[in-house]
Image 1 (tube, rainbow, N blue to C red):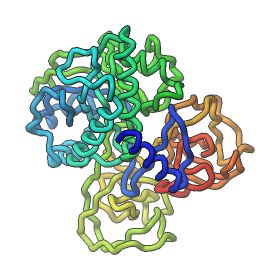
Image 2 (tube, helix red, strand yellow; image 1 turned 60 degrees about the horizontal axis):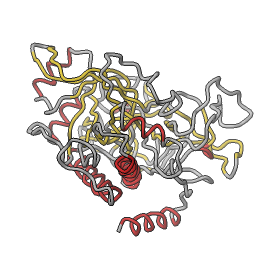
Image 3 (tube, rainbow, N blue to C red; image 1 turned 30 degrees about the horizontal axis):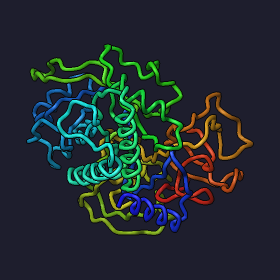
Length: 426
């Protein structure tokens, strides 16, 4: 069944005009009314999701994100708080969410439920599909990163190691087919080393982000033993640097692990109302076709913010859950005229396909380059696309979230010849 499913997926991608990327880079597409969210900063994770009162109290902490165990057959803690209403309330406070799926474990691991050495690919597809279903049920949008928690195992066992790599490869490919970003949590002494050894292998799909466990009290996201700094190099790393201890903020004590991230996390929709009757447009400008009329004081669900022509005092435009855009000037978001936390900027990450990809000051090879380049497998966080000088088979250039430009020819977007939906035009 797995071979049939992969064959069907490959045919579908071919029909859709997607380039036939081989491992380690596999294609990912995104839904119109979604975005990816990059979080940089301190986080904590705890076995059972805290109550809303606890999360409110912990706004006094240095942490701005929380890991949530949202599914998996090996998940051991009850989750009475983990509901769509909890997700809406906590993210409205400004918290980012790091979704953790504790599924089947290594055949040579210590957890109760383990993958089969003979069918780890099929096991991974089932786990990924279950993870996507559970994520959607909580309101975690496509474009969210879902982290597979692969606990420690004996990596000297070659059969076991192979099963884990096949499982995590299939996890990545299936999440990409389901339009989610693929993350892995792994111990630095086992799964991390195996993933690093297979980083450029043509036999395994590379996850988009890596979150390591190394309880050495150092929160550095570089200098990991056995993992070159060029691997998972651009907004793709997290580290759990201290485990299982208590901390107290706002009078509330929790047992937590400490984490630092610069990586994709969950994306959600945020609820606001409009101040007057407005139109939504197919793009972030009144020059785009009108898609709907929204009555004064009606609610809108915003997923991210981007830039566009100035309306009133604001050049910010809000992307809605249906993929349309409205000017932020008439939406009751917290900040005017700038971007409003906790809304992320609209962007979509795709892996790069070559090493040393030049970043330029504009959409063409005539523009000057930045000193640093993008390593293979790094994430190009694309905010918009524009025509420029032709490279390979395409004239499309990608504007990244840091303001630099790269040719789309070496990025695993949906096409090597034209624009990729739902990325907006610059």
